[in-house]
Image 1 (cartoon, rainbow, N blue to C red):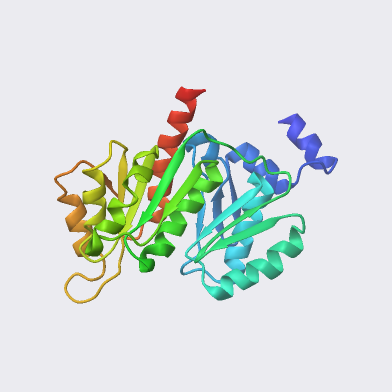
Image 2 (cartoon, rainbow, N blue to C red):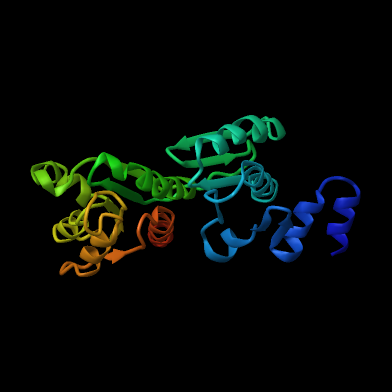
Length: 252
């Protein structure tokens, strides 16, 4: 405790960093940020941007960067991303910002990037499933896993998937995102010995076109796979990261 107080007094530690050390989380006007989640759970807290104002997203991202050296923002719209690029990088000029669809990953220059001896395959049935897959990939990439991305191999033309089968079999864990009837994860899981995480996507139209049909199809799969909620790319990425980390530990 005394060392923390002395560090705050001499300016080597900010009050925000000290609060994170003492409580594990930091409370601000935009909410509470769980700075200790990486150490406690192995997965950092993601900042869910949907429903928040651009200043709130920036405030939480600033707290994340100050306490953990990285900020992972999901479901951000163009206005929020533009504000992050202009405001956040002004406060942290040495930081780098990467964007994939609605997912943003920001890291400070002194953030220690992890590396995992494991490959996560990210697969989409169609182009429309891309943003959800991007979210999953960002989580795995932040953890240091190698990403092998295979897009647009849905079952409407099964040869597209069969052409990539050997590549899929070489991965350590697979995340397969599919909308409409959600058949692709079931088909893939029947052909590989790799753990498969199915992500139903709210793409399609008509009856149960909001992801319910895809979710039901994956839950009823006769092949063995795990299933996350509709559009839950972050959760799929987190689960794949935990598997990849366990493999990395075993290999090293």
